[in-house]
Amino acid sequence: MIAATPELVVLERLLDGASRHGEVSVLVHAEGAGLRLPVHALRFGTDAPDAPALIVVGGVHGLERIGTEVVLAFLTTFLAQLAWDEVLGEALRRCRVCFVPLVNPVGLALRRRANGRGVDLMRNAPPHPETVATPWVGGQRVSPRLPWFGGHAGAPMEPEAAALLRFVDAQTRASPLALALDVHSGFGMVDRLWFPWARTRRPLPHLAEIYAFKQLLDQTLPNHVYHLEPTARVYTIDGDLWDHAYDTRAARGGGALLPLTLELGSWLWVKKNPRQVLSLLGGFNPIKAHRLRRTLRRHLPLFDLLLRATVSVRAWAFPDPARRAALDAAGFAAWFAAGSR
Ligand SMILES: [Zn+2]
Image (cartoon, rainbow, N blue to C red):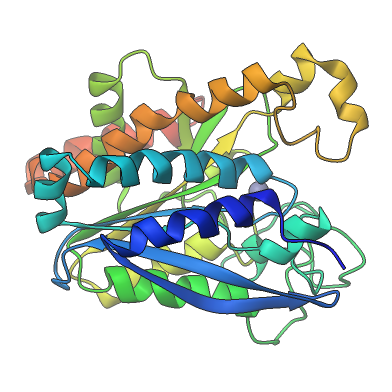
């Protein structure tokens, strides 16, 4: 029998304190390989359906433990602030902040990317007819024995993926604007912030809002480390969960969900400590203690910016038509025009 992972133990220890300030719940129990582990969600702030919302997610891929650890580091800071920080208290009267720090607890316990049934949760949404997925890494529907298996064609979504999307929908369905950050690791030398779509190289309808967020990020944190770009610049994905969440919200109209994926550049940790590539988890996580601590504090300014951007959404999103056209053109030139990078 595999014991619960340290990340789940830390999360469950935080729930007690969290329940004094917000609402904690179990979205679903994830099962597989004889395990049955809870997927916890936490929710703070106003109940008003039409309030802006921020959703913070981690642990979708079981090998990328650092994603959950980065979310737990923010949650720890957030909970400590709740006890004394009147600025945060005021912010939460105007917005909602939700956490799902560990979406795939069975994958984490089994030390594998997929969930307990061998499904890559990030490729598990219903396929979109427009999808042109990169072969293999973009998802396959052939066999759970091969990597990047998104589930059998026509099968219902996996319980963890379906529960996450239901929760996101319930918390954001009437929000004028909601932001989400889903923390992963494992690609490249820099920390990337990816935005939809992942299924196609075409620009998404809310390119103006994404570019307005880029300006906010660049102007507020001028020394930030992030490379903001559409996921599809790197590879295209069949059944991307966040594409599905974005499309579902966009189809309803009257507001938007802007989901970002933070893909921590794990090749940098491998480069500085080449021996760690020999361990199963070493390709995806910082192993040395000082590097782990640096990673855990490195992203706190981003979370703070996201929280402030959520509360103050009317100050930077919802441009008038002329400004929208300008932002849209700038976004297109930055990410979609021939020769952009
Ligand atoms: Zn991942």
